[in-house]
Image (cartoon, rainbow, N blue to C red):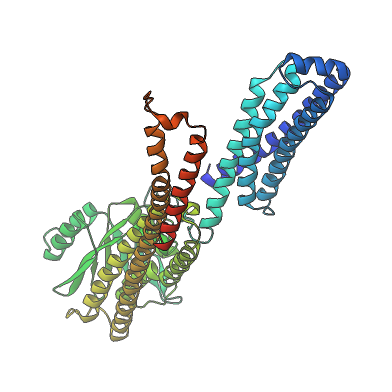
Length: 484
């Protein structure tokens, strides 16, 4: 169950409980009032006198009315909080109002319980369990409403992660031929020319283990840490490490990084990988082909384009989220969620991974475009150069967004520092104002016998005057100094 779902369940349950408490409290109040009325004026006066309370008719009437009004107040708060919580769940209320009602109901429940103790105590017993319920349920309600406030803050900022698809267990197809009518890849038939093949490392090494290019590709496939490409003879070989951040940005439902080695010649693209994520990525690519292809280099081009196809829109969404975050930062710092720092750190980490990936893809595309092996035709080389330029722009945008996120984090820290400075300033001023009074208290609290001013009949009023003069002078000095 997600955090938002738990919050909704907590808010709904506590809202219903608050309404139930209001109904039960109303019944209890009616019973207690009925019991008091049944005692009559003389019985009430005797009960109040026995409890040490004023027993006059006016005092009895006033105290009873106050007790009933306080009990009705807490019942109204409980009922209002419950209704507000249910309205919030249906999108017609405000979380801030629910927060206020929850705190008010919890605090007023103590006063209402003391009133019940007075009324019910005169008639019979006081219920401690009722006090616990009346206090804890509003506090839990406040917690649920507080989650609603945080959800409102993050609305339009936090993105839902792409749900990962189930990884394939067995290889079904690992050899693909070109469909000349549709100019897309399809499973190759036996004896048919293969344009693209996906092999495990063992399968690739067994094919031609004596070939130098095979040894180069195999050595690269054993340890893939980044994206790179090199020319060797009449082929271009290299590695691709597609981070999960790039997969999520493109909406590809894979949860892990995709490591792949490749060997590109003029008539074939060989992909090598032992990871299930690599197989899932190849399967996903074959099912989502868009470009028309006539050569192996075009397949590698589309494979790289698939990973960054929607990244411009993704980065635009990230920028919109950061813009919303900056606007929401205008609120009081106490209303800003405590996990803002963690959110900014995660965003910067994701953008850093994307920036690094874009720059590496730029190098791969440039290598294929200018390779002396001429594995790509002139039009495809131009497409690789265009892909390289697009990746450079994406890398620049990702870097700018990283800096933007850092500025927002610094802004948040500045707001926290300013608030702390204001609090410390207020505490310092209050301490400075009352420090002379503390000195007077300590001075006359020494209990020496020979302190003649203590016996002066006007000493008390004189000290009050001195204290007032000291406080007034200090406030004037602070105002002149613009300390507050």
